[in-house]
Length: 221
Length: 216
View (cartoon, rainbow over the protein chains, first blue to last red):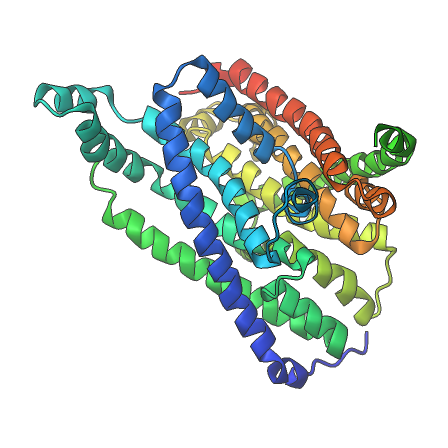
């Protein structure tokens, strides 16, 4: 074995990891925000749409969920610009990919949430004279959000971890920073120990915060 | 374009075989390790339960990519030399094992307490209670999510391409490197992964329907 831990070089280059973590969070937050919009719109559309629209939305969801994220990342970054005359940076390309990717997972979450809203609530909304739009905004969506919060938290954490794939197209997020230190200092065990700790602390802090939100909104069931 | 892709097909098929082989190894190894650790987590003594809990929460809390680099670059640094293929399989297996542990825990926890109390009342030993009462029922709850999780192993296997192993993902990248036909090849690759994983998740849904009768 004979390996002596020495963290000095890690601390000297810690800005690569810290800046990387901030970028990871930024990528996750922007992608999840766009993903939520995609997910909500498609889920609401899905539950009220005819067969053709349903089939198209289902095809999008199934396709994205059954293909490795790394392939989608390559496809958007190296593939799409060869057929469409578009130029975008690696971070933009990754945000685009992760948004479409998270949208597919979130459609599923929101759709099952919408279908779990008790029928009686919608009838009650109708009975007091709410328009379909008002029923959606004031009855269906709030109830659906409460039902889906636990599943949403898990999806968010999982998407945060997925930002590590951005390193394959040289986006300088946390995993990329770790690799940089790995190759430039060879303090391999140390850098991955610190990186692991950073992912764990961030992930579990997020999870804890989301659990607090869940508890706050648990009342109505 | 088409002729170039046709020319590359045997090479892609070889890569696809590696993808399937990696996935199969990971699925089988993690099944064995995960069931053992999962049973340890539910029925084991306290220290074992803590170790498994920490193992599972740590592994599931970090990206697979970080775990893979840790194993691949870290093991040689501490004097353990594995072929890159086996280092990749080891990392993916560790990750999958943590998932299987949770499926086992969830499946066993879903069996009502009355079942094991009834088994105790008719005088079955601990071992008999597990093998004749708990496991047969837990198995049906374990199977659908586990099969669905096999798709994660197939998707996760694409990451071994980053360690220079020529799986389907790497084969596609290499063909693109020669032909510059990026879009058709990535779409072809996506369709292949999709076909395999869709078949698996379809099987999982069918099984779930078949076992629906034990929903309480």
